[in-house]
Image 1 (tube, helix red, strand yellow):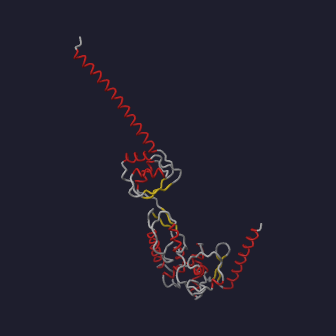
Image 2 (cartoon, helix red, strand yellow):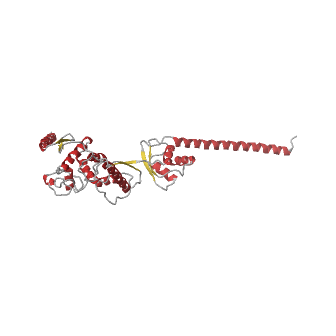
Image 3 (cartoon, rainbow, N blue to C red):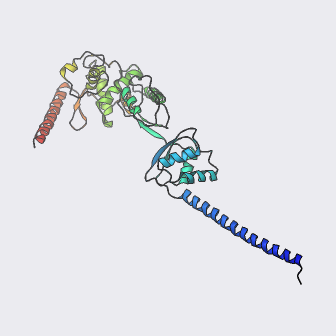
Length: 350
């Protein structure tokens, strides 16, 4: 016979086992749910992102992880801000994201986006400054460059900025960029001046820049730089006027170099310190910012006995030693230009 005390113990033992089984079941369900949720979140964290093409985003200074996630979602870089936040926090990088501009490739996963943001490797932009621009045109180019900030308090003199490709990051200043261009020109000019040919009719490095700025506007062909420079230097040696059309354009446009018509005989007689049809020797200053290759061509010109040159109708020039040869070349050029006009007129009447 089982005593009442033993019956009570058995009852409580059965109840305890029952509750243990219930707790175990609930724990199993909870663990399974959490595990499944973690697995799902991680799967979303490493899955391909929504970007269809490369995209740049600026991460401002001082914003928290949630705002960064919201910004990335707004820019279409990530699919879920919450998944990104959970993934970054679980990875231990919530305090490691650096401000700046970043480039994200197409289909970048949230994890890849996190790695890019914590690497500190910000997107590097390029500013391409072509040869032959005036300093005002270079500043206008910077004004259009995304990411360069600040105002320019002065316009540097022509000939003080070196045309080149400059790399920069979002937030770099325009005046800082100008300073880099000026330093690059100073270094380049000092280097090339020390390697100049003997017997040049150039007294100072500034003279070299002035002539190079004219050569830069006369031809854009690499093969012609040395020949054009040689012809101009021959003129200087003989005391002849340079008679360069770009210097006239500079004079009549007050340095803007944007003349939307042909030069006239009146323009050639225009009294101006930059008009080399009027003044002897070099113009008063550079008419553009010449590139390294053109400065080098002026300081080490191609050996030539040419003094004259005129357009050949094919994008280049034909050179001559005597004025008689030059006149013949000019007549050929005029016939070519006249033929082009005739074709244009007949074409417009069809």
